[in-house]
Image (cartoon, rainbow, N blue to C red; front, side):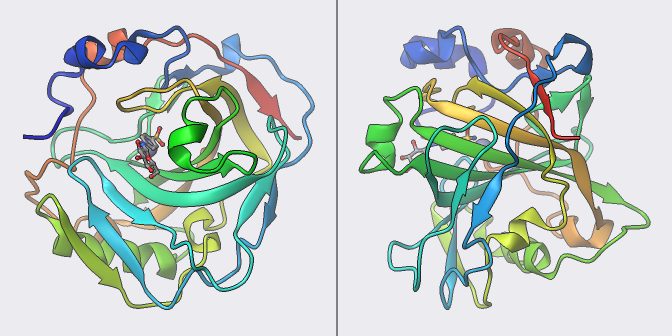
Length: 263
Ligand code: BO1
Ligand code: ZN
């Protein structure tokens, strides 16, 4: 059995005391309770760099995770700016989504609104040696959250996201892997999201150990993708799918809300 799951998130605190902390993510990002402040734009370096010949999509029992290989040819993709001090290197990409009939799947909400899918690009502060070490530091990690909604009339086509979603059926079972045989760059996960518009706040990992080590940048303007892009796993009862319930929301109440607008 996995060490934790989404069915009883109230138990997280018992096994991971940090999940009861005061700066827990996700939160509802509320314009009304946010503070607008001028911040430098987020800067993306090497986001167009091909990640590798092939990428491995892993069902780790909680999510579908893409670890970026250590042996990336060329320099590592990084981000700076926004609420960040320093340079943060991309480590992994994963997804949060809902179950059919079970509601939408984003973790963060904006003015109480939940999106269909939330993509997380996890970055590590360059000054720390690895993710485990960075997780112990308040400035250790930076996660970008890209929202996706299913739309009947999508505005754009996202071939990179398409290839990832098309691979999901091959990792239905926990602890299985599949190879994505195409050249992807991190730009494929950003799509054409408006990165000038973001909420930024200091919070935590959204799952155990819930370390309060994450500076979040959440882009509220969703990518619109076509239904057939994501409904390729119609009766998925595997553990990588989850729904947030009321208890979960209560448990992980908002603690800090700050809106940073670049406009
Ligand atoms: S999230 O972005 O807040 N949903 C999030 C939640 C948990 C993790 C990462 C991001 N966990 C950590 C694992 C590490 C792993 C790292 C990078 O993810 O605890 O073992 O190296 O994927
Ligand atoms: Zn996540």
